[in-house]
Length: 281
Image (cartoon, rainbow, N blue to C red; front, side, top):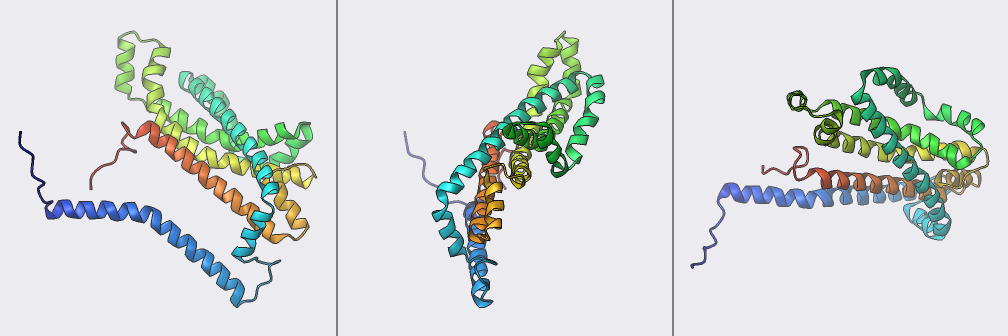
């Protein structure tokens, strides 16, 4: 048995390899460069214009506040995350369950879909005060507010996915006597998976936004312990660095949630769905 010699790559293959390598490096390097330049620009702006720290703190002062108030901020982050993920879980269960009912019966869809749209288009900031009037438990009130915001993307996307199953395959399953449950399990649900995961990416961020908005409303009434409440508390004390530190923590958490949902989407789709399969240039 003879060894196969390593043949040199031709020009086209070399170009493809170079583009792929540059893309891999740029995907990580470019955002880091932009962030570093933004921080440097922020710092220079404060120094050159002699902006006082109680108006706009320098990045170093925000980092100090983040370290000094870490125990306070991390407990508030825990309270916000509890609301966020509880609301997201309820949105998944309710959104997928209702979408399946919509796909099974047009009458159910015609009856309830307008109410789902009403919930989506009505700003949560105007609903939240009413919810906290009628609901005694602060936790349940926060959960309802965050759930309202996160629910619709999952419902809408999953409904669209369930209806996007190939009609020829649906007719074929009917021809072979498949039950509604079998059609749902073996055809409609797999077809809806990419749409559901797309909705999940949106709902992940929205559940965090819903939790923050609800905490603002609850916090303004003197109740609450999440990051929004800490921002309000810091604003009353003119502790601007702590406000920036809390906002930074919220932004970082939102990015992590989006990355987690994107990874989940890749995990389920990268072997078979067109949107996640890598192709050679």
